[in-house]
Image 1 (tube, rainbow, N blue to C red):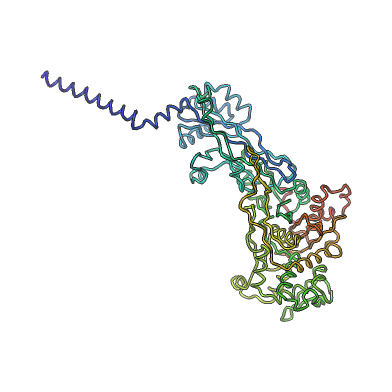
Image 2 (image 1 turned 180 degrees about the vertical axis):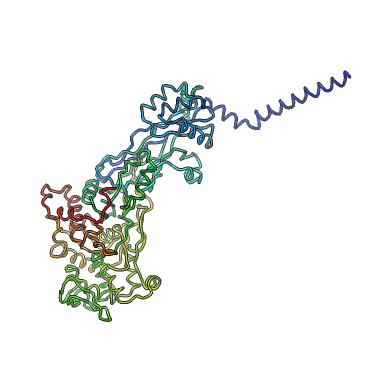
Length: 615
């Protein structure tokens, strides 16, 4: 009996020792790395240092976008005392349930790491939390920034807005690198415009600061005297080609209108101004945008989020005639006499089966030069009747129509340039009239203001296509090193005879001197341009279109303007374009502008209907 008890007791003691040994082995060997990491986390805290987002400047060095400080409250669920939920909720000015919800989300993400749970906390609330930090174990804080806008120019569709990264984006793995997590819950990234297109450069790479903290989460001292800290790096400021003064003027001229304007430097492709109206205030997105405000923007009948400058398609109207002249001269459609050949205009052009297309006048014998000056429809109807549709499409594509434009503008539409295959696929019957309509920029075709501006810039500089670019250069905020914007192609020659280009340029000069653009001349600065009227569907008022470059002998600006439902090109688009060019070339609009016929036309040509002024 005694032996039985002895062995039973021995086995019990041995089993207990074995279990304790196995547990000790698990803690010391098998799970040592995980547990030591947790233990260090109680005393050693890695604090991400989010670098200040890069600033954005205009072409003259005027600050347009920088940062204002913000405060974010973090939760580490493993350390948080749920009994303190009411206290934290009171300091934040939210319901207890909101804190509970954020705590659960942080728990699901990582219970051992601080999770950004409350962003854009007002300073006075942030200060109250700091005062009670000893009671709020597991509550931390981070300082950050939100975007601040410094000029009167909205430039909504150029600058773009930022927003908080979503759970779907985080789980996709697209926003992480091999050496460090670039993004975490609560982080901000660019959503549209420059903010999105240049996100890696504006954001940079976050740094890490390591500190010893006490049981209340308060910093005691730097770890290893800060020698293991990793500072933020690779942040760039961005310098735009945009002139904020031209942008501001153009936006003011589009009040109560729908439309767009794009102005380029014809020698570089730099975007001097890009306006899409109606637009929206970027300040809406610098804080916490309410779901209702987002919904209102998305369902607004005037579509303020839609970038008309690079996406809106409409026929180019008579601004297409310089293109048709170049095609005809290059392809020999005017015969051996070329530029000296004439086409007779008696006020109309026969289409067939007793149908006629009318001209704006009865001009008699017209050369290319005269036809551009007078905007003679008959001349260009005849050129279209002589051309091959496949050649038409090839030339249009060469000029950048009907294809996406190489640019750092992410939102764009390729446009529509038809050929016979298009007509065969979309229409049960098509004929001569459909083709002739293309000669005057009407019918089944659509181009964007950005494409028109690029085409005008190529005419201005003698035949070279530059990729439109919003950014001139980037500057590393740490080293001061400059960098060209990445991914943009080199300039491309059009391959059009320079003599033909110069002839067309002369015709556009005559438009401003004697033709439909004469009321929109820039005082003391010779310019070249072409007005256009784009037919609108459903019996709505026609659209106003205008292209222009100046000065004529040494072009520094080329632009295109579209005004929706405002009538012919000389009424709205031409005066707006002329005033934009004058602002850029002279640095100001003289005080006499209030009596300027251009200003009168620009301000009285109102789009109808329009639901609101700016949103």
